[in-house]
Image 1 (spheres, rainbow, N blue to C red):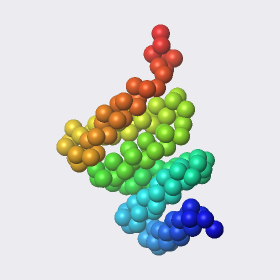
Image 2: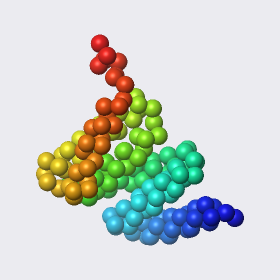
Image 3: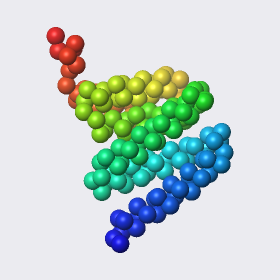
Length: 145
């Protein structure tokens, strides 16, 4: 077994632990968030390995949990930023027409957090990055007229 396979095995072991902890206390937001983070970490690793479909599946699982956590606690700025980050990660796998709504939604979340002065300096850096990403997409058919 190579190093990458060993690392992936370790990540998946961590995932099983996070899944058990989250399942044992579904109302515990921190355990659910930890599970979301593990899915995202596995997605990042799979992306590096070139396993794009599996990576996207992990990012979508992370996004699903982030959505649920924001529904439970819509006023929590950390949960909102996690959701924006998850939307961005999923968008990086999609064609522009499908990525655009996710990036717009992520940008709207980050802008709202910025207006409320609820972002760290590092998180504020996402504003120009998300705006720049939107600018790289080809115009929508309605915009092209």
